[in-house]
Length: 156
Image 1 (spheres, rainbow, N blue to C red):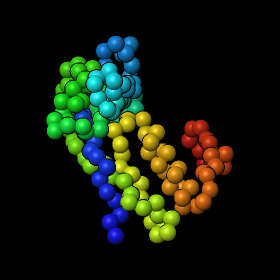
Image 2: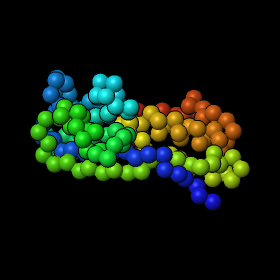
Image 3: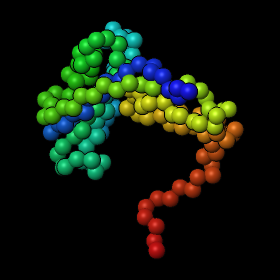
């Protein structure tokens, strides 16, 4: 049995910057969504920026990601509106990956397969997919009230 099928492709460009994104009040992290209609597309373009304050880069450095669902034979041109927001890019890494989804919900087989990461940079769709897999696997909704929240390090 074939467990997944290709639903489309996603282009992601990870960029190293030595500055925050302009017009964000020098924010050390930001999330920008360029609406599809604003750029004549069927899919939004997602831009995220994180920095040394997130312990992901050296002080003064920023990591930006621009991504979208591929709609043409020239995916790099599709993310240009997002890249243009970044200003000078020190280094960039472009990848195009297939977007896969399960061919079966797993109810009979008890094999639950998550979808590939989509173009979004805020992980909402990924979280919803995990919750859906939990419900299909257990037959009930995940109960967040059972999660114990702790702030800070535990003392020994």
